[in-house]
Structures are given as C-alpha cells and as structure tokens.
Length: 162
Image 1 (cartoon, rainbow, N blue to C red):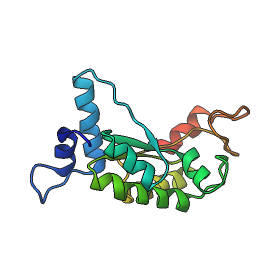
Image 2 (image 1 turned 90 degrees about the vertical axis):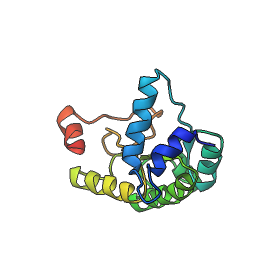
Image 3 (image 1 turned 45 degrees about the vertical axis):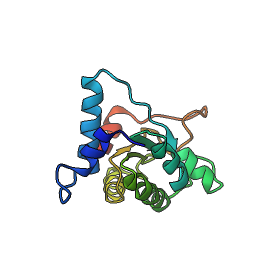
Image 4 (image 1 turned 120 degrees about the vertical axis):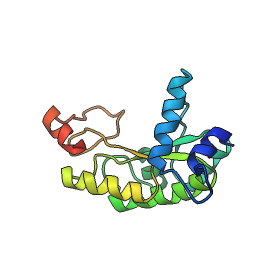
C-alpha cells in the first residue's frame, strides 16, 4: 500500500482538488531527495502487474516497453505501435491511480520525428502517465540490452525533447 504521504500528494489537500500526476511525481522525487532516500521503482507491463506493484507498497512504477511487447508476443524491436503503448499506459494508470500510485511510461523512441514525440508524450499524459521516458536510439530500434543499436546524435536527441 502506498505511503500516506504519496496518497496525500496524489489526492490533493481538498477532495475536489487533485494534483496532476506530473506534479505528484515532482513532489515525490523532491521529498525523496530531501530525505536522501532512494526510490525503488519496479516495472510493470499490464494492469495486473501494476496492481501487484502498488499494492506491494511502491508509490511509483515504470511501464516496461519490453514487458508490453512480450505480452503481445513480440520482441522489443520497434514493432509495437504508439496506439498499443498508449492503450497499455491507460490500462495501467487505471489501476495505479485507484491505488494512489504513479506511473512513468516507456515512450519508446517517440515513434518518429520530433512532432511524433510530442504527440506520444501528450497521448501518454492524457492516459495518466506522470512522466514519459523517450529513448535516444536510431531506427531500427533494438531492445536496450541487444548489441548493434545506435544512438542519435546530440542535435537529433535534443530535438526530441524541445
């Protein structure tokens, strides 16, 4: 069960007021830094695994792109679409939100150019993600632990987050 502090940040001061997931995450990270504590962030890949994480007392979980791909019987090589990842994000946040937790979503490489990255981040935020991780790999994407992957140059990587 998430700590009462996380529930209080997430739920807001008054019942009608609710902090955004991003604001709640910033507060959670600031509190951890102030207390000089490390946050353990277990991964999830669907609503059931997210439920296990938050009911286990973790206030924060990370949606694994590898895990989401695996649930669809696919490798983590860029075959999963933005729509499939946003759908997984929405399903996970429906469980995480109800249990007072927060989600960092895997936005893969953003599914295209800088405009596509912006669209991906917006869709994940609308689905309830507190933050989105964007990889800096070149196409074709490969799972992070597989040899042969390439990384974007500095200019291209920066264009994805501007």
